[in-house]
Each structure stands twice: as structure tokens, then as C-alpha cells.
Length: 278
Image 1 (cartoon, helix red, strand yellow):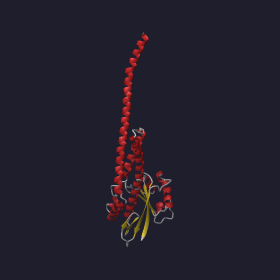
Image 2 (cartoon, rainbow, N blue to C red):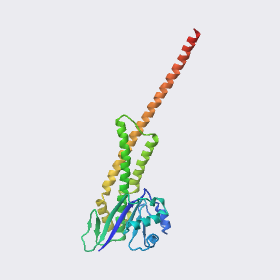
Image 3 (cartoon, rainbow, N blue to C red):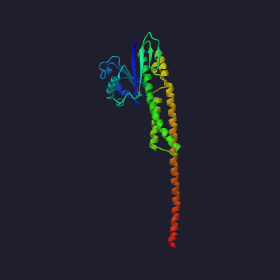
Image 4 (tube, one colour):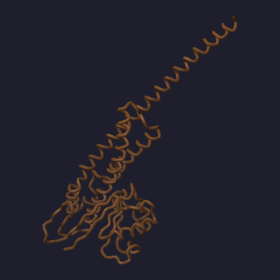
């Protein structure tokens, strides 16, 4: 039996794989969902005593390390960080997930919270496990960001309950931008509703992906994120409408005061003329 330890980190909203691929001599264009896989000589600059270590980088900002301890992970990130700043993090383990792959032809296949056991592993199955872990940890980062935005919205709701409307237009625009960014990252960029294209022609990889996706509850978590995004968009729309109504009411009062001033000023002049003429 052989065992491999996978560790996934969510480092950034996006990693530009095209530039990194060129650096490592990979000329072909990577598909949007295809990870950049580094092993062997491509890792020797950071890990000179290389054995089974392997690294998968995903365009949506996640990196999956295979058989790498914390020191090896930091060395690889330091090396990669020379080519893109998003990979240089003071605390790269803020969002992380660990999983174990056991390969045992004699054991009963299993899949639980700690790991998965299969009879034999193909490169496609390794990529499946890396993809599921990467999507899960990237989704964890999105969920944490959503909680922050929801907390900010909660403060505005509490202010509204007291008849106060807080937040300048710039703040409302910033919050709306944050929600749209999270929607783009979770719905369009992670590709969570879709299976990876490389599983379509590999029944074993397809079955493993379905099993792991259920274990990590990717669809359920994606649905919850999408629902929260829609709620936040509705809240931001409400705040924007209330802010617009407040500005409109202020403008109306200014117009009323200007009209009143135009009426009162001639009357005051006429009255002054009458007084001075006496």
C-alpha cells in the first residue's frame, strides 16, 4: 500500500498560469479549468531532494501540494513568488485543507472526511483529487469573504432599524463591487456546477470526482454561496435605492427653499422700499 498526503491552500482570487507555464517551458495553452502541474525537474530549484512531491496550481487561486511538509510548501511558494506576487503570503495556511490518498489493491474502496482509498491511481485520478480539494478550499475563502460583507450589511440594517442611513456612495459602490467580485469568483471562475472536462473520457476519474464532490458537499456549498450572493445583491440594491431617495428628498428641499427665497426676496425688497419711502 502507498499513501500520499494532499494539502490545498487558497492564496488569491486568481493566479496567472500562462506566465508561470512559460517560465517552466510549457508552451501549450492551458484550458481555464486545467491546473498547472509541477513535478520532477520543475520543482528542483525549490526541492533539490525531490521524491514524490508534486504541485498543482489552479487559475482560481488555489495550490495543491502532494507529499510536501510545511517547510517544502514554503520553499516552493518562495520560489514561485518570484514570478507572481499573489503567491507570496505571510500566512499561506490561512485557508487550507488536508486529505490523504491511499492506494491499496487489497483494501475496500472508501471515501470519508479524512481520506480516500482506491485500488490504483491514474494521473487523471490524482488530478481529480487535487481539483476537488482546490475548489473546496477556494470556496472556503469565498465563504469567509461573504461573511465579512454580510457583517458590514448587518451594521447597515441595524442603523436602518433606528432610522439612520449610513454609508457614502463610495462605500456602497465598494460593497457592491465586493459582492460582484465574489459572484464572479464563485459562480463563473471556480466552475463549481461543472465537472472537469478531463473526467468525461475517463469513467474512473468521473466516478471519483462524483464521490469526492459529494463528500466535500461542493454543490450544496455552492448553492448556499449563490443564495447569499443574491441576498447581498438585494440588500445593496435596497441601500442604493434608499440613498438615492434620500438624495432626491434633499434636492427637493433645496429646490423648495430656492423657490421660497425667490418669492420672499422681492417681497422683502418691496417692503423695504415702502418703509424707506415713509
